[in-house]
Length: 389
Ligand SMILES: [Zn+2]
Image (cartoon, rainbow, N blue to C red; front, side, top):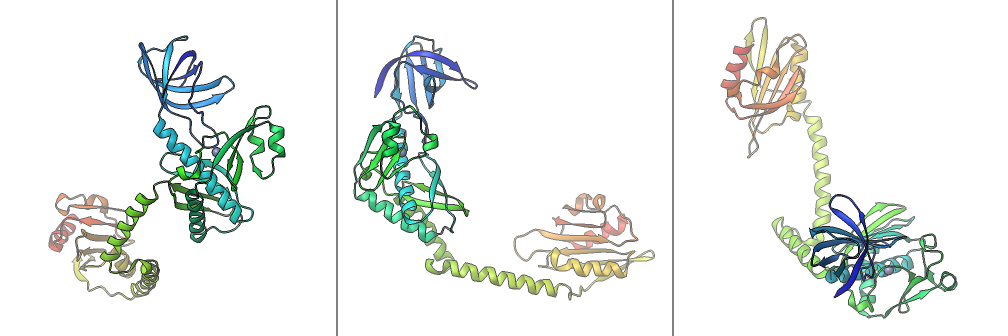
């Protein structure tokens, strides 16, 4: 709905944005975790986008991005709130009241510290000394959706600070309330009474059924994320699960157990490999170079970690030698290589692998280089290494 008003003052904000003070405005300012209203402002000589509304001692300031023209003091303008966004924020904010109430009722000592209300996904921050888990989330979600479906009346009243303080069962952040101003009190029929400056639905039935997406934190600081698109969220997740479950041939209820088992298997196998790699004997091909030797090996399917120990052992016994291992992959991965030199050898390995026909990329230090190569021929490597050294 459009509203006629006029510009009282213009304050420069960042960049192209201005803070505009209006004679009258139906824009709701940010507060209590709910962002300020957005919308449009226009006159014949000026058009702008109001991206946020905040309140300070001067009144409501409309953070405006100028699109055309220049606003001036005294200019008659029309403003219009983005009603769809306002509605969404109102529902989200009202939902937050319900979630906080259920959590605080069900868990002794739990209390909401702040909220971050957003059109798509909102966050509630709270303190709780105990552990938080999915069972608590599911119970909360069910209870909140039940309250939504009961379509309880939501009413608001304005009280003086004294009246508010005397009100039984009122939840309020007293330190954040204005001392001399009236206080808006929101009453969800037989369920919750909270002092709050945000915007609210008239009955809980206006809020769509919600879903808590995730929680994180550790005692005592927790946060939960929720959205109001329960059905869409469930549909997309159920599609992912069904597909995944079919692809790996594991029913959804067994996914977690199977995953944990695989993790344990993986850990066990790593331990076995760790023990085995010290026992690996590499079938070296040996070439004499002057007073020393070069050791070559081609080990398809092996990895650097597996052969490193054996390669180093070879150099401890022959500190003047050079070791080269080519590890062609057995699947689609590129071929790996490992190049080492002993304590008494001093070849510039980095320069060596820059020879273009080796098509090698890698890193390491002066004594050890590893990486991948586009050259799978051990003879090309052997020829280049011997030529260079
Ligand atoms: Zn509220």
